[in-house]
Image (tube, one colour):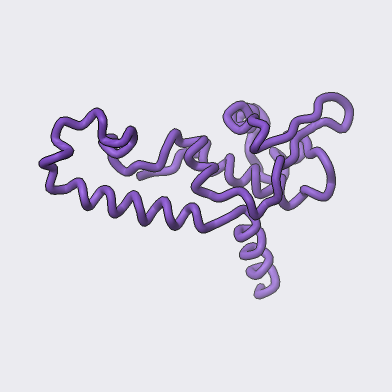
Length: 142
């Protein structure tokens, strides 16, 4: 499994918004500069994340984006599922094995199910706030 730049940049964008949550709405231009990601690419990512349960948008002067919830309510797993379309390591697990004729007799299916379980549990255990906290710990150590 390989996470695309869209998934990685979406995570960085949302962490940036979480870090600046107290500043009100944050412009894509500011995020782009801080994260060294093109504003055009961020616009593509926003189109995926622009849902009422993820982002709040404000247009016009002092417009921008902010998180709809607190940083501890967003998991890495949720963000990557939106941007990547899922986290299944093999296609036969993507839609509940409905498209796989061999599912009943596949000897490798338990391997892929186990991998999927571990990946999903791990990514669902990390929140944006966890990432921020860990980043701050490293800043103090240096």
